[in-house]
Length: 305
Image (cartoon, rainbow, N blue to C red; front, side, top):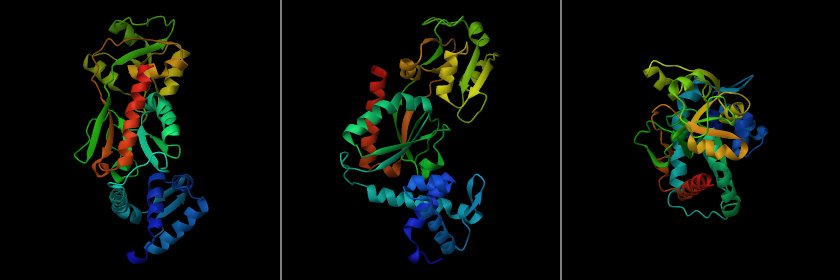
């Protein structure tokens, strides 16, 4: 392959397909038509003398050649973006930039309504693409630059990331008003708590959460229903005697939409600080710095209502 003749746009298509594993989603991400992405993929195959991506019934999968060069290509594009953005002025009112952010659903419910309202006024052409956060470790996409910012309870971040504290959650029990066991502001006994049926929010479907681990240390357990959706969990609580253990700020953000009560948890649960995380290569990105400030303001406003 002669790199001198390689169109940079082909690498952008490669990156999008590597992250999305779908021509349709890659086209949407790039703001192009599916036919344009398919045509670019054809040119990319010719340039590297490899199929690069194989079509399946569920999208596309990378070939071994694509996997071998993937990290290097994505890192190079991320470094190029960082170099181009470094020190560049950011004008919110005229910018057409799109930011990509990862966060949990409960964080999005608390933060996005106020954030989006601010963006519509201060930066009407700026958009934010929110992706689900599925791990407490920085994602590959954040490391490669495909994601600009992540918000979550990160346990280990490494030296290549920077972060700022957004919230220090206090866990509470959420139950429907009139629940036979849980009363507003009253701490139930541990026995009463464990006898209740619980709903566990697990983005990756794992049947064990922080509550289960703490209970196991005490020789206790609980019955759980598992869902990947925090909103579904809150609605299930409204329609049943299920209870949910969740950060107090998340329960407060959902209060306008449900009639629930909150009560203290009869366990000492480890605090998992909610932080905003970004790669050090973006330290001089003034647009991202502006967005972080707006996100902090939006979160504070959501908690003051």
